[in-house]
Each structure stands twice: as C-alpha cells, then as structure tokens.
Image (cartoon, rainbow, N blue to C red):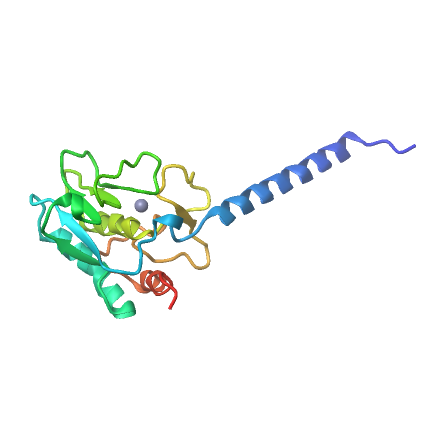
Length: 195
Ligand SMILES: [Zn+2]
C-alpha cells in the first residue's frame, strides 16, 4: 500500500498554492485594460466649462490632447464652453478641493449634474502634469500600475509590463515629469476610435 509522506504532502500543497497564485495573477491581468470601458468619450468634440478662477494652464492641458486627436482624427476632442457649466460635457472646477482628481459617470459615487459626463476637481496647486493626466481619465484612459500594486482606488488600470512599460502620462511606473504626450500616448490615441 502506498503511503503519502509528509514531504509529498508539502510538495502537493506548494504545487496547489503555485496554481492559485498563477490563476489569481492571470485574472488580474485579464481584468486590466488601457481604457476605462464605458467611460470612453464618443467620437466628437466635447465642450468643457472651465472655472473662471483657473488660468491658461487648463486650456493648454486640453490642447495637449487636442493636438494629438487632431493629428489622428482631424478634429479636437475638446472645445472650451462659455455658457452655463451645466450645459458642458465636462466641468473643470476649483472649489477648495484638497487634491486634483476626477469623477466620471463610470464611478458609483458620481452624481451627474446637467450634461456633465465628468468633473475635474483642481486642488490648491495646479500641477500641469496631473491636470493632463486627469484629463486622460476624462477621455477614458486608465492608470498604468505595477503588477504588485493594489488596483483598488485607481481609475481603471492596466499593468506596466517589464519589457514594454508604456512611457505614458497615465503611468505610475514611469515617474518623470513631461507635460507633453509621448509616442506611447499617441499609440493609445491611435487605437481610441476604430477607423
Ligand atoms: Zn490616474
């Protein structure tokens, strides 16, 4: 009669554990995508209402994305809206927030007001890079995070791959500070709307 030795049991246990880790890791990667699903904007120009207390940096950040969308699709994805803020597709506002962040219709705590599909809240210091990053979320781009990072709390996520980590304004794996968009951002935009 065969008997299972304690050593064999340990081996079997470790084997099972390895499979659990592999399957779990596989699920996490499978869940990830560079776009935030339903949060992608439609293929048209979206109006943006800008809080009058904010400066030209906001227009510059919108135009950073516009330049790329004009190059790829022939029209700007954003246009400044000068009427009532409720009529705009996007609202960028500065009203005492402690940090710069974005709320969108993809989040469970989003209360839509008027036509606003997303609201960017500006913190006490307007950092052009973070503003450009948050506008990326308005478009529907997800954060890039390390495989070991807990994805909870991120605005959607994709995994930075060791061999091909995107050098993107949306990436937490690459912490240099350009405000310009780079080839990996242009690759995201190129695949944004099928054409
Ligand atoms: Zn983000």
